[in-house]
Length: 216
DNA sequence: CAGTGCCA
DNA sequence: TTCG
Picture 1: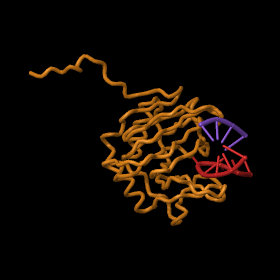
Picture 2: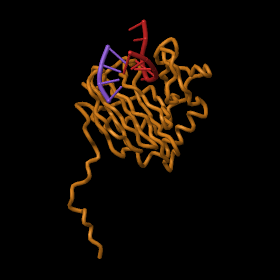
Picture 3: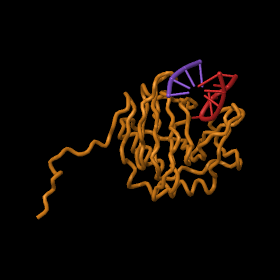
Picture 4: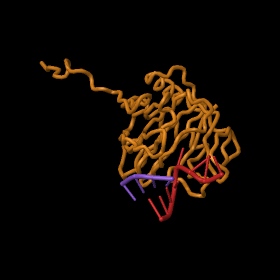
């Protein structure tokens, strides 16, 4: 007869606090990952991933697309949310059902009830791609949290302070992890370090990040 | 106003 | 590597 040696041990903590109002939900979407990846495929078939230009005239290293009522874009004009894809002039693809559900569930698990995102930014990181420290501040209502889903290769997330000069903490994020931040942490600087080369059985040589926001 | 990039 |  086999004994369950772990039966009496406390369950592995699945939730980690980064700061007040910022949590990592480890493996929160593991079982819905393939469905999420199919959603990414559907969206990017219509609104292709593209590397956008910063207002300063530089090309971002992460390729981006969007779905939902609003999409985040950057070009020479600046950062903004807009309802249409500048590549096609068409509305962004609708947010797949599973996207909205995952975002709501994760926000709820982190203590933010009734989160209804109207924007989902899809970031694709290939080896060498990164995202410098920045604040998400193009949204109207800072009472609404940010929900960030990691799929594929692991990448180091940096979570800093309300000022750029505060040293960020490094948080390695793996496939299936979700980060939720809001409240006093809503405007904290954050970013990701360069992606290291690797292979993931579901995504190959890249990482996807879904960032859910209430833009309006 | 620039800017999730870049330089010193 | 940290800084603005």
